[in-house]
Image 1 (cartoon, protein in one colour):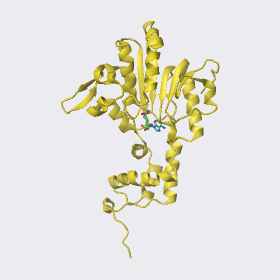
Image 2 (image 1 turned 30 degrees about the horizontal axis):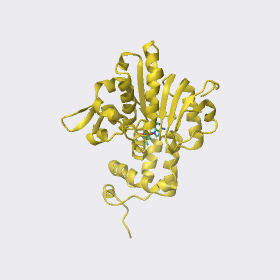
Image 3 (image 1 turned 135 degrees about the vertical axis):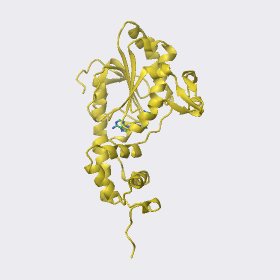
Image 4 (image 1 turned 60 degrees about the vertical axis):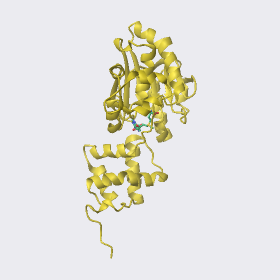
Length: 291
Ligand SMILES: C[S@@+](CC[C@H](N)C(=O)[O-])C[C@H]1O[C@@H](n2cnc3c(N)ncnc32)[C@H](O)[C@@H]1O
């Protein structure tokens, strides 16, 4: 007869994830974050959450599921999010958006800021920070004294680990050197340990916050530009629709909205936007009832 596993034995054995536990964990993730885990993600769930089981000295996924279902402080759920989210990103990813944003800064945002208006940009689902630092680099390279005006970039993500990394602003030298924009190097400094550190000029422009996009948003807006790229691709269509309409409600008329290359606006959301380039949109002035 096979002995039942004891605490501490999981370092070598991979725990079994039953259909019921997979569906329950996937259901919790979906209802709280919008992220859908298809059956094909099951091996990923096993490999990533097995590390959590080992760290917690739990024998099986049923125990883990019970912990996430019954905890009151959301602490383990936060680890679960960090384990299961996809955080792939890079500086100046989908560079055409930064070219469009650069023109927006030169033609509209810089003159508005210089007239004393408030300028707000949002990187929603910012991962480890490469996206907001690319936005801030774009701003400073055409408007070097932007931080002396009421010009701010908000960068948010649900995953506390990536927000902490973003806030630290430290990246391998290669990541900065290989960016598609030459400008980036001018705003990073080489630290003694060989990493590149975001300059204080970049850091002054950006505020990082943990935020689940499905929760109520504490900020009032309105925003001049929102980037939410390669985030909703993991959500079901109804959640995408709700989010796109909420983003529309947060944008100024004429404000820009950028989504990822493989994402598309849902049908209802299309009423709020005019196309303005590849997966980039301009908030129209005809529909004002968004949110
Ligand atoms: C693939 S990264 C995209 C990073 C960046 N926007 C880019 O395009 O390079 C997706 C990010 O969305 C975040 N995310 C997923 N669900 C979220 C939610 N419900 N609320 C906020 N952020 C979420 C993940 O934690 C992850 O960092």
